[in-house]
Length: 116
Length: 113
Image (tube, rainbow over all chains, first blue to last red; front, side):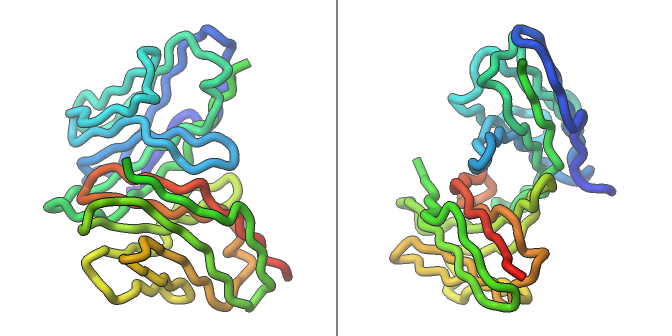
């Protein structure tokens, strides 16, 4: 297993276009998280899944954002009608939930979105 | 809501010296986890060290150690014998059980040769 993979690494899009990002977690990890990170700031939580169930969504996640994890494996994050304020690094992370113990996440390299 | 504060936006240290990065957090819980993550320029975040709140003993990983003060809600990271490869953004994070992590704003660490 090569860790958490994110695709694409970079995406430039015009304002108003839709974009979709993909995350492939570590295969045995049952939890998958999406975060957004702007330059010089810490990651901000967006949403997370346990297997295929989306357990929590941040208020940051407007109606234009949707995330799925259809088979409990890979996940997609879609942003509709992109705005310049959506420009950020989108980070995916995964973890194995073992009896409520938090061992921390394994992060992917992120997808950098630039909206022009 | 839980918050994590890193009051030092930037720190610098001479190579081979020791540096301490500060982190405070706010919670009403008694059982939780604390982490330090490292994010090198243009590279992914990696876990540096983890602390369980119910353990009084401070965590240590090679040159990295923490000073966990539960009553003061303080969780500082000490890097001994600093190396050029330690240059990165460092983020403190808080988590309850297997829930999401809340991150601080980060501290940019520069190592001077």
